[in-house]
Image 1 (cartoon, rainbow, N blue to C red):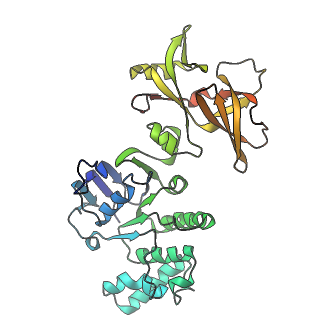
Image 2: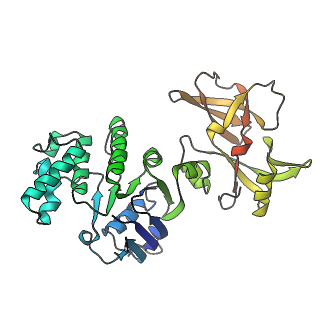
Amino acid sequence: MAGVTLTNTTKIYPGVKNAAPAVNAINLEVKDHEFVALIGPSGCGKSTTLRMIAGLESVTSGQIHIGETLVNDLTPRARNIAMVFQNYALYPTLTNFENIAFGLRVAKMPKYKITEEVNRVARSLELDGMLDRYPRQLSGGQRQRVALGRAIVRDPQVFLLDEPLSNLDAKMRVQMRYELIELHKKLNTTTIYVTHDQIEAMTMAHRIVIMDRGVVQQIGTPTEVYTRPANTFVGSFIGTPPMNFIEGRVDIINDVPCFDNSNMRIEITKEQYDKVMENKVHSVYMGIRPENLRIVSDTDEDTRHVVKGQVHFTELIGADQNIHVNLGKRDRVIVRVPTDISVIDDEMISLRLNVNHLLFYDMNTGDLVS
């Protein structure tokens, strides 16, 4: 097993005049045994990055190391990696046993050893009673497990998975997420996983790499990227519902540090104010997660962190509900609260912001400043 290191790795497709790089100078170190997810919108460069690691795409500039080996010019087979695709890529005329064994036969492993290895992997994936069947006789989740088995049986240094669950229904995706987590615990193999589904990334990965337009926006643990998004793109992409952003200014008003706009004036901490001023910023987006607002009584005497708004509509999402609230003509926030809190459309309500969870972003760059 081995880690994977990308150093200023760039991909530019030839023949497209003035085109931006599909992947622009990505720097990433995936440690040995680590599970890292690449996530971002369509066209952000996550699959291209994975394909460069696999050797299915050439590298325009920069370097890729697997372990200590520079692999830029090595063929996919020489890299000792295994890749699982979105569409399973199974041979329909071969049995599941033959599909799992395919790579071992190409490598000319002895027949008894092939049988031993395939049976071992099949047991770990609960496929041992299905090896004589053909892929068409299996469910989508079972076919995906056969594709995983074909990768696992080769005992690669690195697993590369390109949106392997996107063709499954919602219930099967949940089950397969659990199975992949358990599989990684058992095999402890370095894994790089591409997905557009933030729930998959947040629940499965040790660290997440968020990309947009070929550029890495943030690398961190699920907790880090959720609680302190590096910029407004990450805040709006990670989280369901996304982070609320409200335009305004940070200033001293009546000797009190405040966030201020035409709809509200919120007292903030001196530490938050000082950090914004260190970055020489006044015009900001104030960011706050929906669960860090709560509905309070209009009779509450402490109004320092309270704003008033009008309920626009409510989304029921099981045990919780998302309440969309208009704050004046320009600003709107989403509040996440339990379903036992009752509100009606067009009702005026008071919201308290948890000041300790406020974040501030430069309005010009979108970058976190406090």
